[in-house]
Image (cartoon, rainbow, N blue to C red; front, side):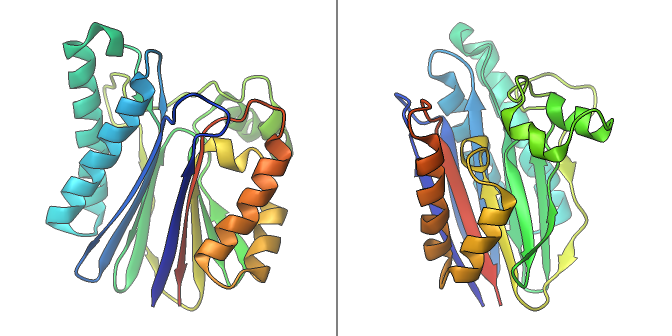
Length: 241
């Protein structure tokens, strides 16, 4: 059994550069979230292109490792193509995180600092590692994990879609088997910066549905973001039983 809920909010900004989406093909599901970067409103376009490319490929092929790879490559191709066609779009870039849920397996891929959290039976099992300067400092043991959220270089990303590469810069993780209760949270930095993992778990244990979980977490996000010119924030909750 699968249940899910999607959320996206403009925060205190003039427009929402986050884009989210989902698609079901037979018994396979695709969930996708992108956080756009770039002036002249082009961040919104970059994230839209990434989500559209991901959904369109999944709609034809269904879940699988090669489909994830193809999604990132096609999103990159479309963004670079738009950069060349529009002078104002030269700086547009985006993060991208994708979750595929099949009948027997789950798999995900990502680039940038939009995160995927994986919970098992209400406990945090794993999360994606940001492609950012602070995350690099954590890996070098020059910074604590808990310090990422407030680091002055928090928004300095090392990998995004929309920058030419000689070899792919995204990451696709090994597939996980479906077993027992599994919960997933995909979210942009505007969301996870304002709620820590302990609060996520606390809300998860009290929630009755994915929507209830997101609403409980959103309440904390909005409270912590009050008076801080909140960024756009988006999240997708997926529960498997």
